[in-house]
Image (cartoon, rainbow, N blue to C red; front, side, top):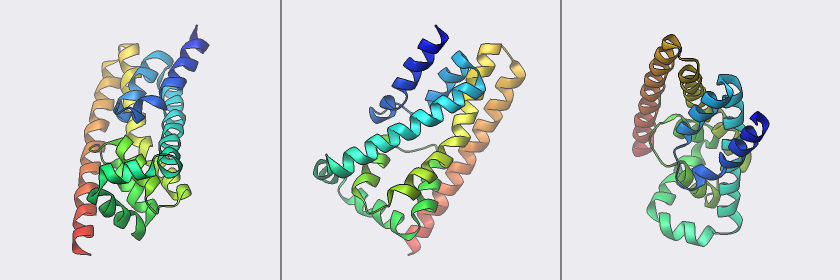
Length: 175
């Protein structure tokens, strides 16, 4: 049953963010069901697989539709990506605000190279994935200490992400 649950979870994680489900919340059920470590690993691999699927779907299949839907926002993101694709993507992934699916689609139709986008996405997903897997694992274990630490880390992660987002916006407005 555990292997079946892992397979089902792993099958859903790449799909749900593409449908607009918040990526941060996908690690919590994994941590709850499989423990913090397995939940984090399964969520991380699934999130990057979903990121790649959305990216390549936009790049090779639905590019014109995505460009039409995003309009001027796409030009802004393309400018952001052009300066330093890895850093820009990493900063955007750390920010707890925003739409994961739209960023994947926008990157797919932008000029951002795939490798730095995926590497920065993977690393940018990690802090919140760890925090949420830890939160789910703490709920599963009934550990108040684990819940307290994961909530504190979540607040720190959100603060850092917001700070980075504000700085990224200010840098792009001054250029």
